[in-house]
Image 1 (spheres, rainbow, N blue to C red):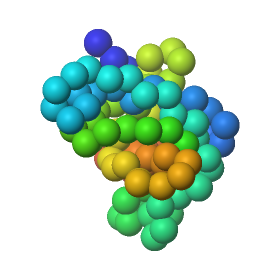
Image 2 (tube, helix red, strand yellow):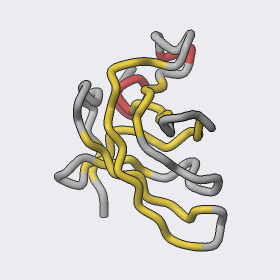
Image 3 (cartoon, one colour):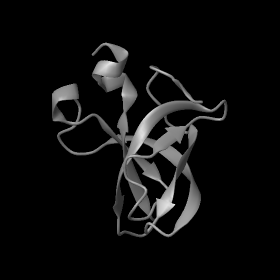
Image 4 (cartoon, rainbow, N blue to C red):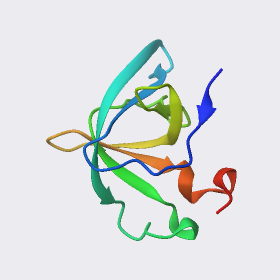
Length: 100
């Protein structure tokens, strides 16, 4: 049982993304919130996706990104094939779940 947290993740905050990497094994990734947003996603209608430093894998999309207290703050969206590895997540604060 997880709870939803409607506070947007803050720069420097650590989130943990959980999911089934490549559909084969359970994986938890440590993600560091950069404070940046995916280009064009600064409004809820544009996506509201935060950029995080860390590595997620195909198959983890749609899984929760939780804070250190186990509260869901974002949903894993995608992996960027870059150095260093980056990921993005849909911030719950920008969704109808949090009244926006």
